[in-house]
Amino acid sequence: MTIRPLVILPDPLLRTVSDVVAHADGATKALIDDMFETMYDAPGVGLAAVQVGVTARIVTMDASRGDDEKQPLALINPEIIWSSDALNEYEEGCLSIPEFYGVVTRPTKVGVRFLDLDGKVLEREMDGLAATVIQHEIDHLNGKLFIDHLS
Ligand code: NI
Image 1 (tube, rainbow, N blue to C red):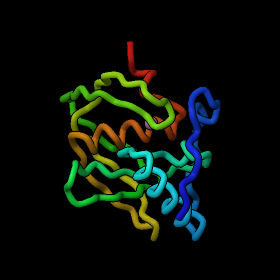
Image 2 (cartoon, protein in one colour):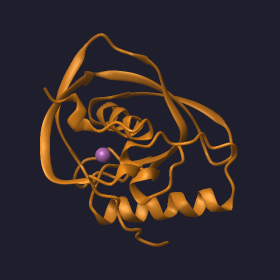
Image 3 (spheres, rainbow, N blue to C red):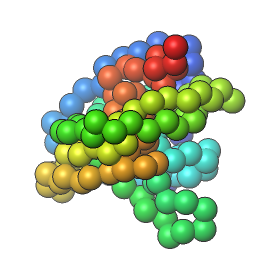
Image 4 (tube, protein in one colour):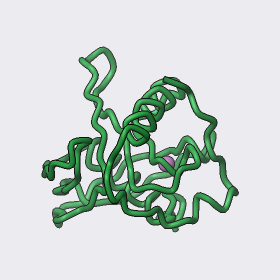
């Protein structure tokens, strides 16, 4: 596993729409391993592949808190399939925008559909920090940044 260099604003890559992963292979697995290594090293709670320079729809995240057991989750081609009417405010930051934070309002709960490394379709309900993280990371896959949500 390798810590990869992070893409930092204003790199135009961060405004790129990432490509759907047609099918996961050994390179996808290696990329995901490196993304976890890079994310935990930063440290951060979520990372999109574009942030290490690969414009593929892949996200790694871990919304566990403090000394809790780690909960690494890799999502390929993730999409939001529903979101709650209830909204939540969370102070967000981004590994690609160092030392800048802002309060973003997003749905409190979302349903997420994605593929795992075996190509299996999974669905998961996320709330709290996990919901914020996955929405932030899917924005990255669409070339969107949390600062776009700030008024
Ligand atoms: Ni980010």
